[in-house]
Length: 220
Image (cartoon, rainbow, N blue to C red; front, side, top):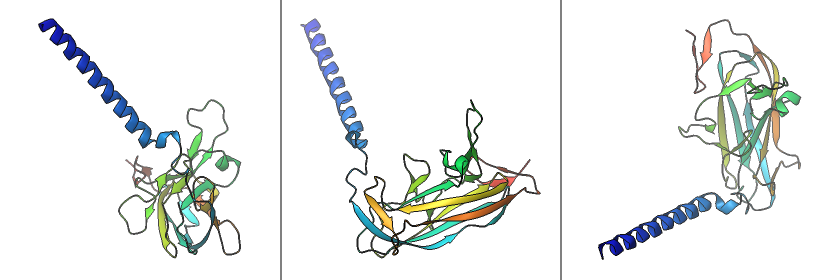
């Protein structure tokens, strides 16, 4: 009887363990959307958007920190599903980089071919005046998702950037209304909202370094 009881107990333990694994797998699938993207049900349509503010210093120095600010208003009568901003550096080197504030080094067999021009500070981008991060990363590292934006509302968003590479660069930004391509942002004139910042970064004259969190500090 004792052996039989132990055998039954082992079977029950195996069954409980299997059930737990199945439950965990189910939760994992549910968290990932069951294999479908979170924007699969994004409402299709055109959404009226206006860039009300755009600022970024045009003269910069290596080792200095600057704020890139955008004000984006929903000029339409319906909620924008997902306000997104795509950022990249103009030119082939910027377009082929996988990072928004970097250029791609064409040399073969480099472990990390993307070379940062600016380093984005930790917990940025965010909504202006908020202590919490505001722009969630997406599958495309150049695209930031700021969530739904109600009709008539304005989102003021900011990136904190440290210049780390001297040269002349044109930073591009493009605003859209979704992630799947079904929702499109348009200006009153029917154009895709966005713009550019032409920036000259000169060599710094003081000894500085950028920390892992993106902050500029005095060098040792």
